[in-house]
Image 1: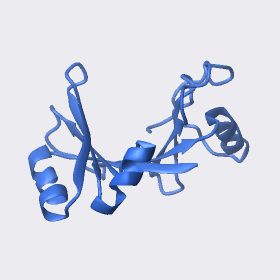
Image 2 (image 1 turned 90 degrees about the vertical axis):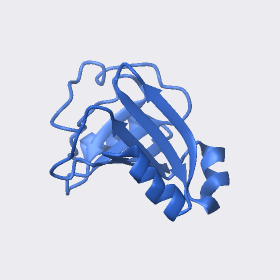
Image 3 (image 1 turned 180 degrees about the horizontal axis):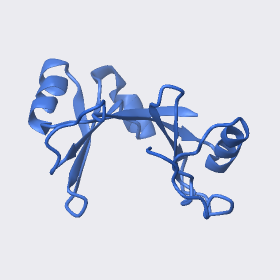
Image 4 (image 1 turned 90 degrees about the horizontal axis):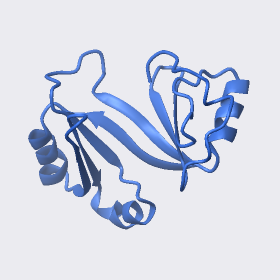
Length: 146
């Protein structure tokens, strides 16, 4: 498993980039705009982590700016912590057998979400290409929030 990033939702991309980049010295390494979903993702890395971020395509921070959201209440601005895994089905099976709820099953062979005991979302992403979709995951619905 490799740590990928922490995602936070931001109400002002301009103000947040000023804070992280101008004041703290982080650098933007990637930006994605999704007009259909109406959001922008900006990936940042600290100066001493640029080589690692580029090598593993794993920035430290993902800023998510939802174009239509005015504010976030109840901690919704903190999104999730992400890890890449060698086999998403194996880890989800192991977690489920240990009594963990798989909030977003890996139906696509690529992504799953679980929560820590304190309710923090953890995103699990398959290393490399997605695995072929398979049961029992294909048929499982989302459980709760993720």
